[in-house]
Length: 392
Image (cartoon, rainbow, N blue to C red; front, top):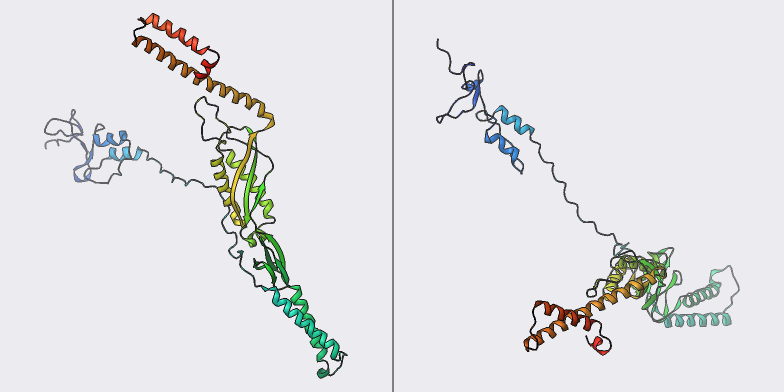
């Protein structure tokens, strides 16, 4: 019998097959089904390609005809990149909601004109007087004879109720009614009014008010200590929230002014000491600072029924412990800015003088003489005194 061509002995043809062009092809493992398992050499581009690609290699699909043992091992050894964590949404500062309790909202209470109450009290008093003069008010066990005394008692109750519910409604003030701890409504009517005398009546000032803060200790964006005075214009818009949603709405407003001032003033520097033009993004821009301060205060005070119209800084100055040092720094910045402007004007004047002299043919200068003339003119203009220096 002749020996099989794919024997285990032989030269370079052992375990491999050559293609038509004489290149070494994939080898087959004897004894396997289907003519042997194909084993590709290490230089196969299908094996080396996933090792040098930047992106994630595709998952191989098992195929008994083309898949190889080496291909499986290489793909199993390539680490897969970890899945990227989802990007977190930017955190926003927490603020109070516009309404803390939907049930705690101002609503009108029942009230009527006080003149009707006076009329009822007068009628009850007149009826009581008639009974005292004409009727027999002695107690009697017979109900038919005791009606004058019961009628007198009813007249007294009507008179007391009518007079006890009288209130004076003032312009710019409101009455907030609570009964057994429950909010019953608000009366904003003016003049003589009558309401039930059972609820507790609390007067609330709803006029437009302004509050000037004491000097607040804050720092700017560079950590410099400052003293700021803030003027706030506000009013009570919702009496129910102002009375029941917070212990004291005026103290709450003071605390929020201090907090908002510290937050706004710490975002920008107090001054710009650069020699260039003045930076508008400083605390000297009171319009921008006031708008941001008003926005923050209005958002924080809306939940307690306080409406903030404006919050403006009146004074923003350095703290006493750093005022002297910052004053020296300010003077140095002003002096440097002034020197820069003077030097610019001197250079322009020298350049104009040299060009005018050359254009008119007054002098004929080489490079050395031109440099000397420019130097002399610069020193003369820069060290000038009197009106000439002010003009330049």
